[in-house]
Length: 47
Image (tube, rainbow, N blue to C red; front, side, top):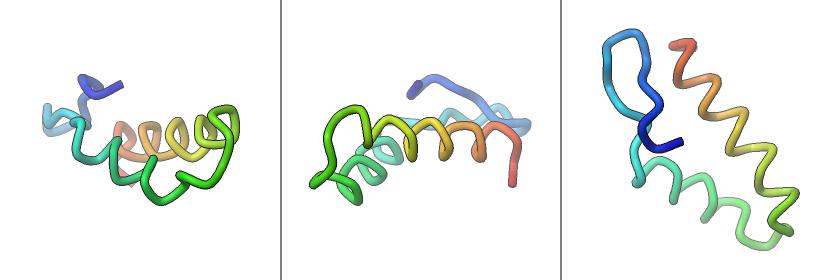
């Protein structure tokens, strides 16, 4: 996931992944997965 790239060839990165996980730390791993995947998709699409 951290190596996912957007249209500008920028990588998603570990820092961004950690930020999303930190925002959802109180959730179960299964529940954290949903916002992480949504954010990666948003990053890739440039929206």
